[in-house]
Image: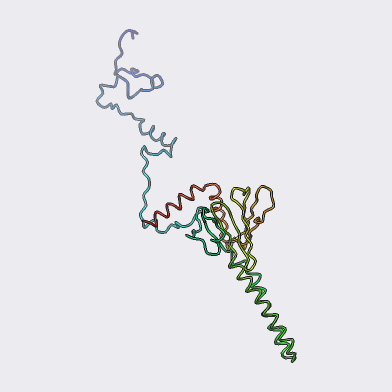
Length: 268
């Protein structure tokens, strides 16, 4: 065939090889007049499947946030989490108010955990059993004078236990916007305090039993100096109390904002 002669579209070999033209078979002008020919891309489905395979996590153009009903949210525990705080008292007790100055903002006061009394109560219980047995033995031996002595010893031990219980009741750990304080003692009062601005390091320690019963020991450091308030044992809920003190030290504006919002909610 003459190179200048046009080719017959129906002639054998008229179609171009596939590797000569990427659009062969569906974009060739020789097949545009064929009624059985369609211009649809026969590889469209394969291309879409390949695209999905390469990006199986492709997101839709518009993301719709999930919605939950009240019934679905009823089972959630909304009170838990790392940012749970102990409730604040509105006013300090009479025991504490006398140690605060007018411009100081009260944040809370806490008694030591009841584990603080296990030693005295254990001694009292042991003394009761031991002296009761001793009194019975002396009575059988007709030694009345020694029974009286045993009873007096028992009364002394019980008085000491009662003293420790009262001392525990009047013992307070106090937090304000300026300092932390520990006040204890019944007849002889002891007041120890440390300004929050002087606290250089603070930590709390919990034993295995402390984690089970929710108590711990706070250790405060202040510029490498000797402090009257360095180690405070048997404080309740140490994690929540730790967060309260740290927030007061580093984010006092957040505390004021939260308390102001709570006050507005109560007024409403």
